[in-house]
Image (cartoon, rainbow, N blue to C red; front, side, top):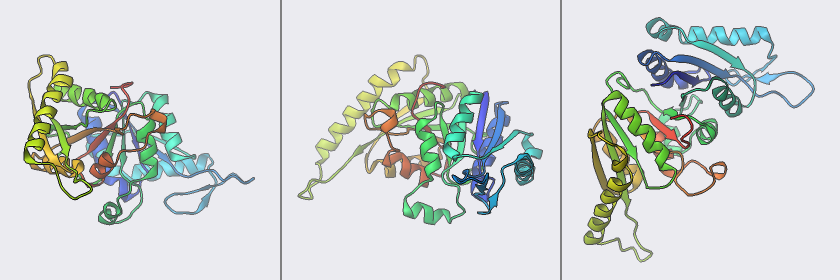
Length: 304
């Protein structure tokens, strides 16, 4: 299903969970796996130096240093190499998001795998602050292939793969995410859950919608899922339609935990704006930070 996988890493422990998924996914689908580490941004002065992201020290990005970085990557992921096979290693200086996107285009990657953040902060504190790495945000926005985001360890992902959740708000951007989720479920032969959360918001006076109104909106959402998505799935019948009411990201996370989902697929953003002006939607941002399983961000149909 994936011919070429690009795993973007800084080779720190913060990327270990994502590394495990990258190696396992590559082995399962016999994909070409490339590990890419962009180790620092070039200085704007006259000297040819970079600031190493791991050590914080000034380094000269010559051939010797690049080879040293590659050797460090091989050492860091030695146990995964022994278990799943050796990947290709690449290292370079530059702005991380720019170089990751450039290299993904160069090798025509079918999937980019990243951690939700690359700092060695306490994951709980990271989620409490409600922020995710800016590199991941930029890559997810502009990548022409799906971006698989890993925020915490996942012990059974992809090897015991049987539950995919597609979260939609019926936006135009969600169609590419649906196509990816559907094709993946059909290829693997696993169940696809078409999920929508009816957003229940109180009015300025503090009054929420009545039960009849909620039930009407739930019914309308199910009919919309049938019309927009089910109508495109031909003879594929291993799916269900799930509509809950509440705060969208909360309900999606609750449902994913309830069914022990292996993957959540969502659009990078939901507002009807030009792709270059879009920012990561608040719903997927919260799902990425809190999900117990990988989250695939899809924003373009280019390489599905």
